[in-house]
Length: 133
Image 1 (tube, one colour):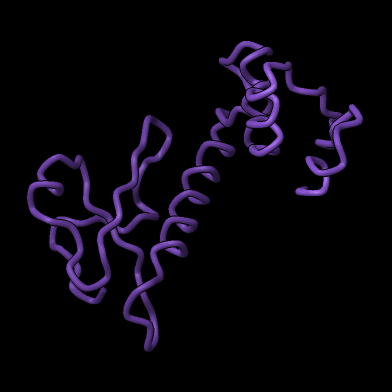
Image 2 (cartoon, helix red, strand yellow; image 1 turned 90 degrees about the vertical axis):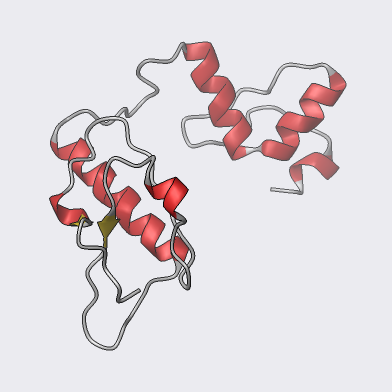
């Protein structure tokens, strides 16, 4: 909103290179005091013109893209699962890309099918499972 806390900082002046957690308040009430006491820094996204606030999804996207931009410039953005085992990385990519197929595989007690570098499932699955994607 338009009421900016005096102790808050313009998001463009923040350092998001280290561990970062964003907490968003409601448009009307913001965050409660017990929550803000736990935070290192209150931040805001400057507004221009007749805009008084952003939808929470727009605010989240703005901050996440800034954090990503800073990490890319610093060369510390994981690109291929750095820091994770290959097995865990492959499992998570499949679960994020195909959550219902992953659930179906778990229910059947079977391994996840392999996926191509383009994210395509490389195995013939029952038609009803594949049609969901």
